[in-house]
Image (tube, rainbow, N blue to C red):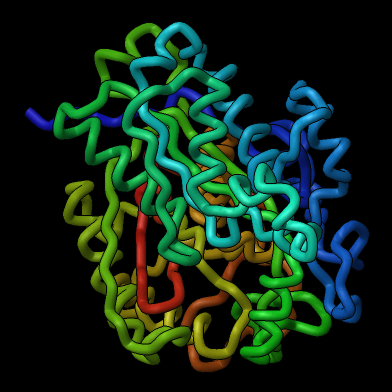
Length: 391
């Protein structure tokens, strides 16, 4: 008999809030975090972003860490989310037996940008630059000693930590695991996306006819996954019932126009969950607000769900695109949808894309939600889909 995978805790920090309550309040009040740059030192200040409105010192204070050490912003965001997930799950006594699967795309790049010219005199800073530093530091904080893994598959990274963690539990390799992702805003990130000419000058508007690009965000989210035996007696917030990842390798950055990679992952996730397309109540779309991505994903949704398309929205109009953290952040938003039986809207949608047959939700709405499908698609064709279900 296949083991079930339950979610017993989750933590989140993004531009729309720190923790479950602030995040839910922003979602229901349709309060977007997309706005002017406050903390990032960059010459591209004309572009709006979604920033966590706290300095690094403010983040350190939230973690309770000593101020004497050097921490990347990516690590600080990740630790805040992980602390909340662990507290909610009440798994502190089991931490040494758990694993951690963490993801990031930029790692400690913010420190590289600050200290580039004097790195040769400060080798302790170099250790914080690599992507693995975040996972290792969070593991060290909690005393997790094995199965410490860093995953980086672009924008599907943290969705893949959830997939991998679920597989490890189902195959009896672990009874519980901390999974998620974290990414901070950096000049490297903003400049890189700007070089691709896909950064929105006005703020992303997913699935709108006049969409003009992505908005870069920062944040982190972590979830505690446990087997049925390990979760006995605990509050269960959801179940990971379906998952899939496929690499279509269509292009270095662009999605296939017909959505073939997305079609494969959605269908496989439904197969793993053992449910029909018509049983999905809501799709939290990847929906970045770029011309190619939204049309590609929309075509995939139409192909899989045909005439019975579920409720759809992208919540990146709230948080921006948080890169490696996006899949986990949107998984937490899916859990909030299940907990409150609420669908959150697709902000800034004024003129729906004419090429698609469906129109995403534009208002907060109470709904009967059992199964949520969440998409995360990364550069290089790294596509992932999760199905999170009410227990």
